[in-house]
Image 1 (tube, rainbow, N blue to C red):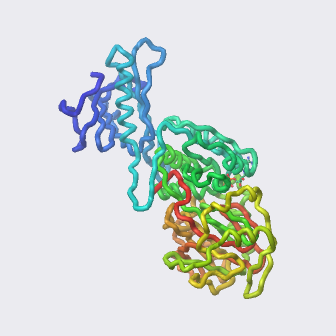
Image 2: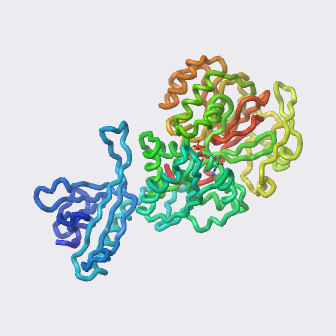
Image 3: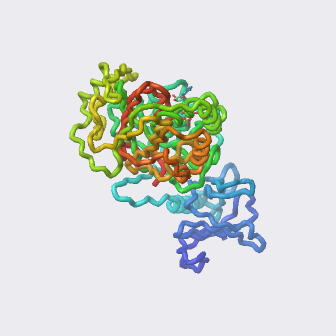
Length: 537
Ligand SMILES: Nc1ncnc2c1ncn2[C@@H]1O[C@H](COP(=O)(O)OP(=O)(O)OP(=O)(O)O)[C@@H](O)[C@H]1O
C-alpha cells in the first residue's frame, strides 16, 4: 500500500517510541522496492524493506542529523506522483579515517497512492513538514543566555575571500557548501571580496536588512574585518544582533575549529571541518559571543573575537603567512623558522583576573580615549615615560565611538593600572597570548575550556628561560591541548577580564585575530555576549 496511517491502526512501533506517521513508499531511484517508513516522536525515521530479503534497505535515520526535507512534484512523466527527500549528515567512520566525519545520506520516496497529483503532494508535504519539525535542534536552556534559530526559509549573505588559505574557497563553496544550503532551504548571495577591507567596507555601509545571517567563508582575518566593519555602523548595536557564521576557507581557521569543538565534535581539518561547520549553519542555532575591545596607545580601538598576541606565537603567525598555500601546515614551517631565532621580548604585563571584584572608579572616558588619537601619548617603562606616536585608523572619523560599549575596566595609558589588578613582576617574555576561543588554529587547542560567552580572556604567557627543545615540545602539546600538563614553571595561564601589555621597546610583532599590528602598548577588556554567532552552546 502506498499511503499513510495513524499510529492507532496497529502499525509497528519501533521500541517504545510513539509513532507519528507510518506508510509505505517506493524508494527512488530504484522504485522496484517499497519501504515501510515509520516516523517516531523520538525523532527517528525507520526505513525498512517490505519484501523478504531486502534487509539491506533497512536503516534508521536520526533526525538530529537531518538538515532538511522537501516535497516536490514529479517531472514530465504521465504519472501524477509527488516525492519527498530527506537529507541527513550522520557521523561515519571509514576504515581509512582516523576519526568519524559527517557524511551525506539522502533518501527520496515516491508518493503515488492517488490519481490526483495535488493529493500526493499534500501527503508528501505532510511527511516533509513533520520531518523538518523533528529535525529542529534542541535549544539549550542556560540562564542569562538567549539562543535563537534561523527562520526557514531564510537568506544569508556569504562573504567569500577567494585568496584565503590555499585559494580554493570559491571552489569549496560550490562543491561542499552550496548543495547543503539548498538542501536546508537556505538561500544565499555570495559577495566575493576583491581586495583587503572590501568586506569591512561593505558591511560598514551596506544595507544588510535582506539577510538573516552573515556568513564568512574565509579565514579569521576576514571575520575580523566583518566584526569591525559592523562596529563602525551607526546602527552597530542592532547590526550585531544579526548572527555571524564562519565557514573555514582560510589557513588557520581558528574560529571554525573552536565552533566545531564547542559542538562536541572530534577535531577535524580541511573539507571535514568545512562540512561540520556548514552542517552547524544548516541547523541554524545561534548564540551570543563575547568580543574583546582592544585599545592601542596610539588611539586605535578594535574589536576582536579570537586573540591578541605578542611574541613567539604572533611571530609564527605572521612569519608563516608566506607559506599560506600550505594551508594549516604553514604554522609548522613558521614554528621551525621562529625557533631558530628565538627572541626575548621585554615589557610589562598587567591583568585583572576573573573573579576579582571590579573596584574601578575611573572608566575609560571618551575624553581620554580621543586624546589618545589626537596627540602624543605617554606610557611608562620602569617608571620612565616613553612616547608613542599616534597612528590614525582608517575611517575612524565616521565611527559612532561615543555609543560604543564603555571599557569600564580600563584606564587611559597615562595612568597606572588600577590597584586591584595584578602586575606580573617578570618583564622578559617569549610570548604573551590572550585567546577567547578554544582553538588557535584547526589543530592547535590553546584554551580547551574556553566557551563562546564565558566572559573570559584566557591569558597565557611564557616567561624567558625556556629551551628551544622545551618550546618545540610545548607546541606539539598545544596540538592536543595538553600543554599545561607539561608543568613548565615558565608557562602561566590565567583567565582574566582585562589586560594591559606595555612593551619597553617596539620589538616583535603583535597580532589581533591573526592580523598584524605595530608593536605598542595595548590593553583590552572582554565584553560579554556582544555579538551573535551560529554555533553553540
Ligand atoms: N580578494 C582579496 N585579495 C587579497 N586579499 C584579500 C582579499 N579579500 C580579503 N583579503 C585579505 O586577506 C586577508 C587574509 O584573509 P583570510 O583571513 O580570509 O585568510 P587566511 O589568512 O588564509 O586565513 P586565516 O586568517 O585563518 O589564517 C584578510 O586580512 C583580508 O583583508
